[in-house]
Image (tube, rainbow, N blue to C red; front, side):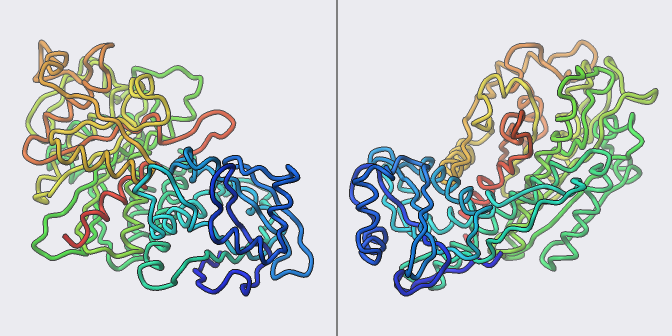
Length: 497
């Protein structure tokens, strides 16, 4: 797909299709007024006749004759009082849906002068350009690698986005949006890959491939012997029931000054989770291929960094394992010694994510991190608490938590903070080890984070529980690519500082 910006007058820009915004109530954007004038008042006539109404995310494709464009796509943007960033994004998604399998080969999108209400983060043209770029890439995504009959090639191959100026700032904003969308799509590709292909060694190969494609990425992979030597017995215990050996994958992006401390991302990479000896129910178990959603999001964020090259240092660490039940699998009642030296009584082998993460969180101390953010499809309890709309956030530092929450708001990739007060720690008490790996039925998301907090006392740390947001179930089943936008927004806000 060819994406570019266009600062020429709309009426003098040739394209198969022109896209304009139409409010349900309120003033029209200047671009819509200009298009209406060029079309002899056609948009006004259609609105008065009731053929188009401007309701948010409603689209109307109108054939034209003897114009610079063969078609006009009118995208409803709703009432002025309801034109939030989230609703504008819905309108952009509806626009892309109407275009992607349509007859047009080239389109001119004129939406950046749409006025939003009560959303300062998207008030600027630069922010809208970034969101348009991201939405285009995200909504044009498809995963058909394993379909014997491939979908027909799309006719759409050229997208122009109208802007007041096609200068450096506009191009960088638009390209960041496109890169973020591509990062989301990489995360979706990895998540959607079947588990007979996507195993820990395959993820390691993908990390090496990313380093081969981008000179700014350096990759290292630790095998079982190396992890054993480091004392990563907790991570190894999760993978010992599988024929696929676990891996610790390290990717480094060094775009900042050599003296700058790195921002560290830690991803849970359980490439398939049966629950181990504490076997999960069979219904829906196929979705446990998405249990590596945290690592997929880390991959996506690293690709965005590689494409945009911000001035920041970032280290990504992925704890990859497959949780299977065989004669060598860990059992409820086993006790393991973590890399930190703390001991854990495994009461439930299906609470394995925290067991791989705790060793990774100990390992990252070697990088003297500025902050550490771990991402994990960790608890079903998070879905009960927050549903599928919001990521759970827990942190040992208020400033870090607030920055991540703000990044989620700006990126429309929202998170909500839950407490990890000391009072919850007693739920992890064990009669036989320093701690148990589960805390009982209550506060499951919180006690999982409390477990991880015991390994993060030497640096600023935040935990993102993405169990409810990393993938969609049902008819629309598939990886979501979240929380790549949140991560990218947060990291870019610290680039160059």
